[in-house]
Structure formats: structure tokens, C-alpha cells
Image 1 (cartoon, helix red, strand yellow):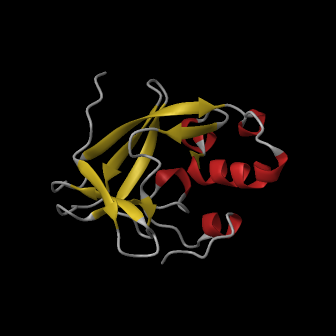
Image 2 (tube, helix red, strand yellow):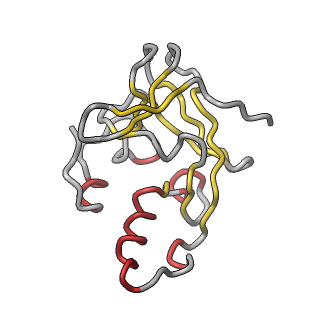
Length: 149
């Protein structure tokens, strides 16, 4: 399968989120926005350990970037999304959902509703299985971050 770059751009959101990914054209509900190849990490704890003084920040930083591959692809481990996959900000509800493609391996980001050109593209960090809505903000609590509502 040939993977093409998505029709998106990155810019500052003007909010505490910092940078975000924005649609450079409109997308229809159900339309594929991006196929993001992933680097599979079977055991994130087995990554090369940084020096002791930055170990906590390194592990926390990795947790912030990794997707739960086992919950998406029914295979163990985590996944680091390439492309724009690890740059999408969270929203509840989000305007995209995502799913695993274990054959590539990759994550597919799909418009959950019509999305206007220049609208920020978002996923829901809390929704299990790449869903759009979640009743709580457990991911933010686990990461010790104030939820973005």
C-alpha cells in the first residue's frame, strides 16, 4: 500500500494546548484523513534507559506519546505513531476516530463528522479503542495533567 501525506498543517492553537494539527481542506464524515505508520514497541520498559537524572521525565514522555497497541490491534505492546499521529490534540468529543491496521502496521485516522478546512483535527485520548467520546478524563488523570475540556 502506498501511503500519501495527509492534507494537514501544524500551527500554534493559541491555547494552552500549544501546537495542533489542522485540516488544509474539508473532510467528509467517514473519510480517511491519515494513515500513520507506527513503530511497535513490545515492551516500553525495555527501552534504553536514560541517565538516572532524567529517567522519570523520559518514561513519562514516552507514555505521553505511545498508543495502546494491545487495545487496538489485539497484540501486545505500544505503538509510536509517525507522521502526524502523535501530534493530534485531544478533545471530548473529538472530530476523528482512529483504528489499527496490524497488517501495515499503522493507525488510520478517520473523520468522525464533517470537518471544515482550517479546523483543528483532534482525537480523544480517553476513549477506548480510538473512539470519539468518553464519559471521563482518565488518561489525563493517569498522566497527572489537568484535563483539556
